[in-house]
Amino acid sequence: MSEGLRVGIVGSGRIARVHARAYRSVARGALVACADVQQSAADALARDFDLDVYADAKAMFAASEIDAVLIATPNGLHCEQTIAALESGKHVFCQKPIAMTMAEADRVVAAAKLHPKQILQYGFMVRFTPPMPALRMRVAAGEFGTPIVSRSAIFGWEPSAKWFYDPKQGGGVILDTMVHFADLLLWLFGPVEYVLADGGPYVLDGAKEYGSADNALVTVKHRSGVLSSLYVTWTAGHGNFTFEIYGSAGEASVDLIRSQASVAFIKPSREKSGGWEYPDLVWGYGYGGEQQHFIDRILGLPVDAKAAADVHDARAALELVLAAQKALDTREVVRC
Image (cartoon, rainbow, N blue to C red; front, side, top):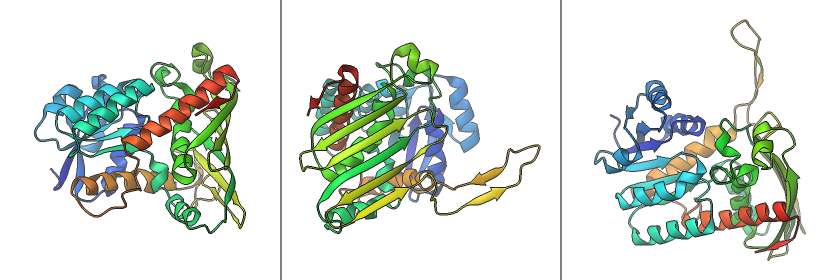
């Protein structure tokens, strides 16, 4: 077993593998175990990343050899599993969103208050993805003058399971995917005055079955006066995002679709489709950065207290996406 903090992951699906790869570059901590309701998924993750397998989340939470847990299960399970892990004495890193409803979010906030010595951090990896941390500092320093407008395009991968579409388990593209930029906009520009939204199930059968959107356009008016426009989709066929900010004294843009830090080309062969590759800043830095921050906070090492999303940040992001979903459902202005 590697030296340092021992982390177990609950859930063994697609995002669990992203975190498992990220932990290969994390210092002072290691992913050592996994659990999943689907035994075959847990066994496959354990085989690929040399992990121990626990029978279920409850067994992992009770294990004295596990210092912290990473919750990477369907969204509808986040509330109960976070509370159970805190009550078991574990430090917790939970994927977004905090919960599915504000009532659930408030239960998590109350549980966190009862366990102040345990770290509870949420998975908003865009905060750790270059150049977003530096951009935030420049906005705060007033380099662009007074912020006026921001524009975001958020490209999520097509869901790998039906629960993503289910309003009770995944919540659809706004709750599951736009929530990253709900947190980002609150981090950059502060509280929201009102929200407008439109969209629908344009392409994906799962979205049509559950009546949830796979594409949406959301407009956010911040109390500071900033107007933010967000396009979020599950049907582009690729992931990542673009972001623009326009202020009274300047502007900035981030394009992680076409402007990654490096580019590679692999000739097609019988074994591989080949083509151009763009090693990704989100996968390469964002996930690893947030996990390193989590480990260092547990160890009491000096970190930027505002870098990661805490339980209150996660609650605020949920409140914004629920307002956006209500605006989408009603086609009316929703005030926050």
